[in-house]
Length: 114
Image: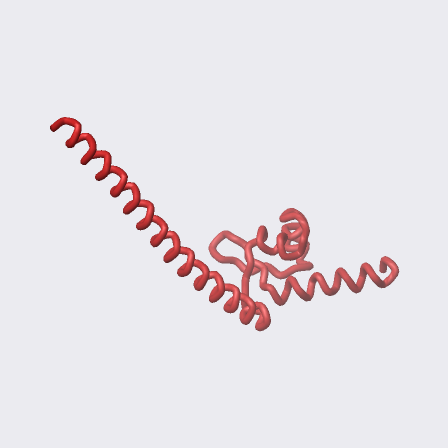
C-alpha cells in the first residue's frame, strides 16, 4: 500500500512538472509573440515620428543616437546649440533638432576645422 502511494505521488509529480513546463512554454511563446508585435509596432511608429521630427528623446537616448556621451548632449543644450524642450524638470531633445545639430557638426568637421 505504501509503495503504491509513493509510486502514485511520483507519477503525479512527474505529470505536474510536465504540465507546468508546458504551460510555462505556452505563456513564454504568447508573451514573445505579443512583445514581438509591440516592438515591431513601436519601431514603425518611431520611424514615422522620427521622419516627421516629432519624436523627443531623453538626453541619454540622444547621446546613444549621436554616439556621444550624455554630458556632450547636456553641454550642447546648456550652450543653446541644441534646443531643449522641457517635460516637467526633465529636458528632451527633438529628433529633428538633433539631426540638424549633427549635420552642422559634420559640415564644420569636414570644412577644414572652421
